[in-house]
Image (cartoon, rainbow, N blue to C red; front, side, top):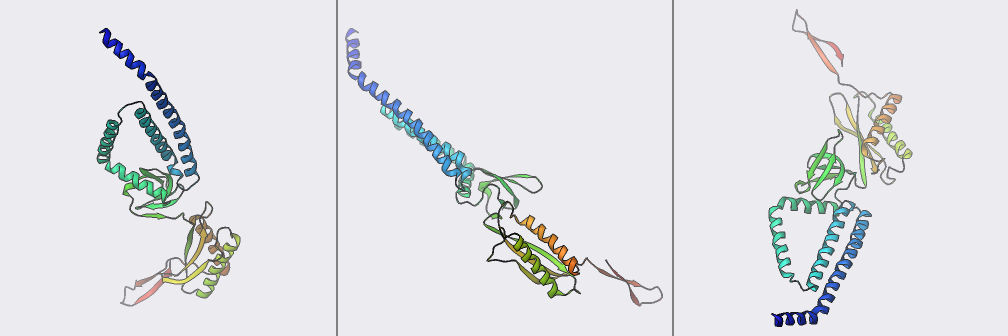
Length: 289
């Protein structure tokens, strides 16, 4: 017993300095890893916040921090003399099991990552995601949250998104359809419609492209009571340049201009025939709305 204790004490004395230095070095690695993780996470958050991928900033910051901390922990354990091979093998098996068990979650996350990185969808965009139309409130890795015009909030899993329509990219066309009576002077109606578009472009140079002036398209189709015209204005997309407010403003201007010029915007009309009791002859009784 005395001999064993003596040998043990001698072994500890011989290796005490080495153990202490390894433990100290491991602790230094952990502390440096923690500092580096915080710096890297902060850098990732700032870099993404300044770009279109700001929706990824919180997740990217957390992933960077965890990656640096786990790497530092493994290096520290290895420096202290622990066998990290078993830990790495166990982590690999666990990750494989999680991947198989959460295939839908992984699919959603991967799809969400590319939606953000490729700048397909961003917050405050008006989008159509597989038939769900609304304004984007949040783009997460797993799902995207939309709010429709009536206030309904839609939660769309990113992995289910096949087609994306985005109305908030660089420019958009404000399109207004208007019908004029068959009896009206079509050429004059076209001139008035073009003048309305030109006046709007002059009043809003910050919205309307100079190299793409408004265009009045005539005689698109023949309706039951009208000949249908169209005014198209290409505008820069912005908070003030969404197509719906512009279209409403154009409709108001068109109505005022047509009223001043005496151009009729017709209402539906019907011709009613009345059969007389004494014979088969038919006569027009009225021609009214």
